[in-house]
Length: 133
Length: 231
Image (cartoon, rainbow over all chains, first blue to last red; front, side):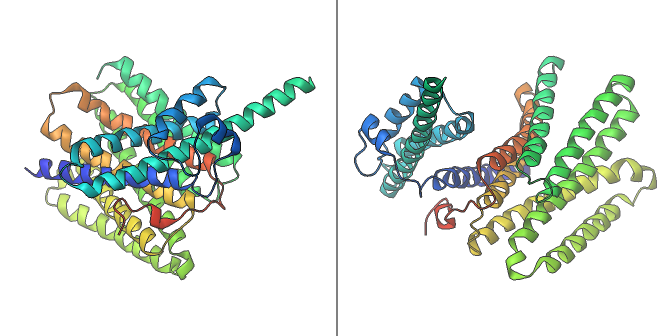
C-alpha cells in the first residue's frame, strides 16, 4: 500500500519535473526569432504552429548536425509525443488541455525551427571554409 | 543482474561522470559548481572502489557490503551538500546564504541523530545498519529539499538557466529514483526493475553536463514559462 502510494506520488512529481524541464528547454529559444532561411525552407510565416513540428524536424536530418542540439531535440521530441498523447487522451474530457497542448507544441516547433536555423548557419560556415580551401 | 548489461551501464555512468567534470573544467565552471563536481567525482571513486572490492572479495562478502553501504552513505551526504549549494545560490540574492548553511547543518545533524536513535536499540546492529539508515533518511531529506527548492525558484522568479535546469534535473532524478524503489518493492520479480536504479544513476551527470555545455552562466529564462500548469 505504502509502496503504491510512493509510486503514484513519485510518478506525479516526475511528470511535473519532466514538463518543467522540457519547458525550460523550449523557453531558452523563445527570445530567438526564426531566421529567414528557416522560413523559406519550412514555410513558417510569422509564428510556428504545433503542426509545423513534424515538418521542421525532418529537414535537419538532411544536413550535418550539431552535436550540441542532438540531445535537446530528442528530449523535446519526447515531450512533443507526450503532448500528442495528452491531446488524444484527455482533450475530449478537458477541452482546456487541447489549447494548452497546442501552445506547448508550438513552443516545440519554434525550438526545432531555431535549432534548424543554427544548423543551416553551421552548414553555410562549413561550405564557406571548403570554398576557401 | 547479467554482468554484461551491468558493465555497460557502469561504463556509461563512469563516462557520463567524467564528461560532466570535463565540461565543467572546459567551461571554467568547476569551482562555481564545486559541490556538484565533488559529488560526481566521489561517485566515480565509489564506483571504482566497489568494482575493486567486488572483484577481490565477491558479491556476498562482508567487505563488499561495508564498501557498498558506506560509499552510498558518503554519496548521499555529498548529494545533500550539492542540493544545499544550489539552495544557497538561489537564496544568495536575499542575503540568506548564512541561514541556508545553518539550516543545512541542523538538518544534517538532526538526520544523523535520528538515524542513530533508530539503530541504537541494538548495539550489534549499529555498525552495519547506521550507514544504511542515515543514507535512507538523508536521501529523503534531500528529496524534500529539492521539491522545496523548486517551489523557491518559482516564488523568487529565479531566471538563471543553469541553476533552474540543475534543480529540475535533481527533481527528475529524485522522483524517478523514489519511483524505482517503490516499483522494486511492488514488482521485485521483474528483471527490468533491477536495471532502473543503475540507469538513473547515469542520468544526473548527463543532464548536468548538457546544461553546462548548452548554457552560459549569463543565460536567463522566463520562470513563468516553467510552471507545468500556468496560473
